[in-house]
Image 1 (cartoon, rainbow, N blue to C red):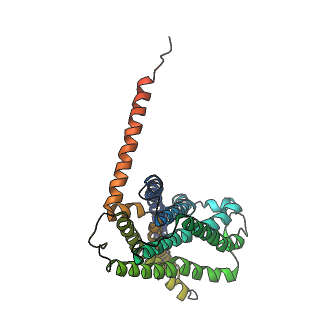
Image 2: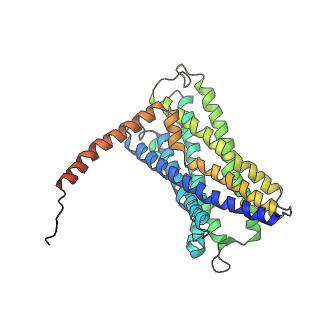
Image 3: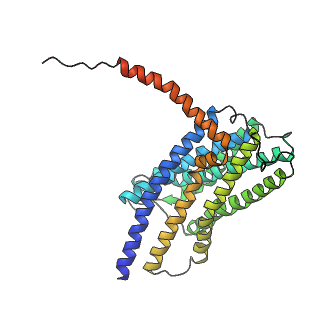
Length: 321
């Protein structure tokens, strides 16, 4: 009976793993692409350093969708891991995937820093676009270099495998993930959110009492994003603490199955960090909502006549019998 229950629980975990990742992949890809288009095309956004940081974070988030979530979809629904087919793909996934997630979170932190500097100086001091571009490039180089160690240690010791076999690195990896994706972003973003909120309360025209000024709306979006990042990062942080503290405990098959299910849920919640920001912005900022709506309307107005002309000019040739 225990074996049947364990097998059932593992099957539930794999199904949740596949279908949950599939849903997150689609809503995340759709949202990230719209975020990228919006922040590039909307003139009210593409002139701010914080917007440039957010744009970079969307690109990083979409890389997470492609390198991590999509592969989980394939494995969860088919049981086949594409990483087993190529050592290069194995190494690239474990280098680019973690680096993309860390890069995205770093850019969110930089956007919050820019907001704090602006608000603290009452919009007299700011990070320039050139400084923002340099910071983004340095962040990308740093995280790719940092996680290149994964590319070194992830190997295929046997055919159809992709594993971390170095015992020291196997012990370090949970700690690296815990600090990079949980401790550092949660602490840094919590402090920045507190500083921004406190400083806003001292301004004559505060975020709380609204206004539709551009800077107020961007600040509103960033605060909302910080809150979501913290909330979606907490489950993985708690599970990481549990995993690290019990790594020497011998587990029964039933307990391992339960932990697999819990880990799957925590991982899926963590992926929401990189999947739902477009929808958070729509709720948090009325200006962003209106701008996106206008962008869709203008795009439809341009596409509709072309489609109508194409349909009108299309001729169906019926062959003679």
